[in-house]
Image (cartoon, rainbow, N blue to C red; front, side):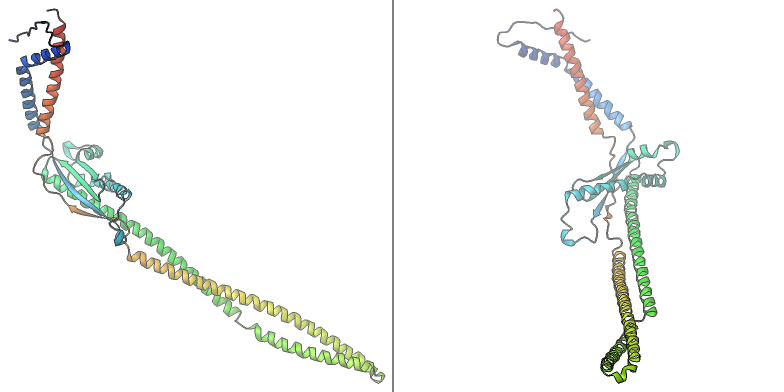
Length: 366
């Protein structure tokens, strides 16, 4: 039988109203300690029983280290900035890939039978990927009812994450090497075209072919000038001698012919000299193009050799450092945590109820 607690309000000058209410409230709770104890015990026992009835789930964890590119300077390998470490969070996407998880779920038959669910909801319940703050460690956790399967599943996901990273790095290497091969091929084609143009020019216009002709014309022009000077001298001499007057027309015609031939030779020499200069300039331009093409070809070939030699070392390297172990204790339900939570919630609810009840009982006229 529940006995109603009665209060006697007696004035006490030694205590104020607030302290008096507090002592009355404590007495009120102390009078109902059996109710509080029974509710607490019931909550703990009920949460214990419910926890035992809930299906057990086990969590296995594997760890992957993200190593910097192998091509980095050893002296700066340890000087890893926080920005670089934060950028490594992108590797969480590798392990959380829907394609990778779908393959793992199919491999372990997680989405088959009566328990078939969408890949998204299944992944949220099973897989958790975290890049530990300020470290190069990637943690992968899998939660399943079977502890052995949980360990095998997380190990499989870790291995596939490493393989996926390597395949992406290999694809990047193939793309970079392909671009290097394209540039090397273009450089080789430019070199071949330049050499062909130089050879065609040399065959069509041999080097120095015009120079002997120019020298011969210059020699001939000097002889003509000499003859012209002699003719002009004879004309001047014959003009002073009346006896040779009939020779003057022939000498003047000869002088005119020599002047005409000299003018023609001068123009010929000028044209040939200009043509020789143009051919020399063209030949020099082609030689420069050949040298530039050779330099570009050698640079492209060296770059291609470097790309091939450093394939697989330009990106971060993932390595499984801890494949995880078979969990011995279930991660859920957490019996101790459930019992503590049930006890606290029960005490809070009961305390709220008793507080309201205490306030209501004091308002009633006694």
